[in-house]
Length: 150
Length: 162
Image 1 (spheres, rainbow over the protein chains, first blue to last red):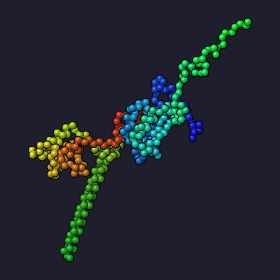
Image 2: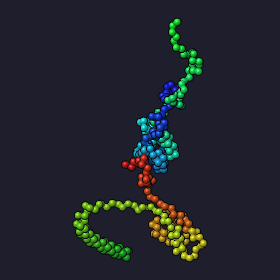
Image 3: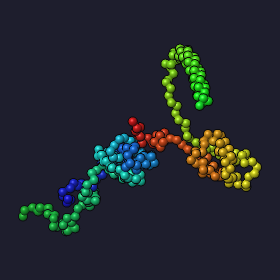
Image 4: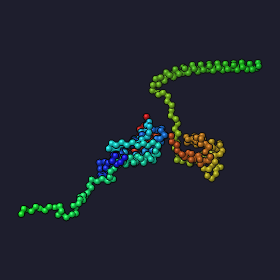
């Protein structure tokens, strides 16, 4: 589909995050996997080896580990603005899951759609936007004080 | 023929005798045990409510932590068993002699509470192998139990399996 047919948004940060302090937008991460299924092997390895390190490196994210009878292992990320993203981790290795979790932790909860412009600013011009009469003799625009009728 | 018949008769008599003896003994024992049981039951009944039913005790823990002075212990044992006739390096003492091997391994197992499993007996050819075996720690917790028991950071929550 063309750019016009699909959704798009402008580049923005959630509540001007980063202007003052930076607040991680990922609120919680749920690792849902089956303790016996073969495709959840990477997930189990991740929980055994890497989950503790990940939790230590990201102390502002709550990590829930839920071994349960699910059809496919899933990494569910919830963001501060309410967005919930589910990523399938079936047949992935432990390192790939770590990278995926790090990627989710660095994202904000804004939609993943086409960004119209790769820049955004609240103050587009400091000295005033140029127009054709900038830098021209002011006689062109200024009408002098009205002289009295003779 | 007659001898065989006689033998059979003797056998039957003996068997009968034995059987009778056995049954009589059993009756004696049965009677005794019943009486004993009744007496014991009477004393046990008031206590039974406090005592729990017989629960199977947990299997023996296979945990093994090598002591710090394992090398000196092993050296002492080897010297004791092999006697003064040792090569320069006691680690290379060969355990080809089965008696020697058995004595050493049995003594170490009794002392340290950790025995070489049957499947690895053929690998113990020298004192060096025995040293490496007794220097490796063995833990019997599953990884999940270990993880839950270890100190988790406060932002990691693990849900126990139902």
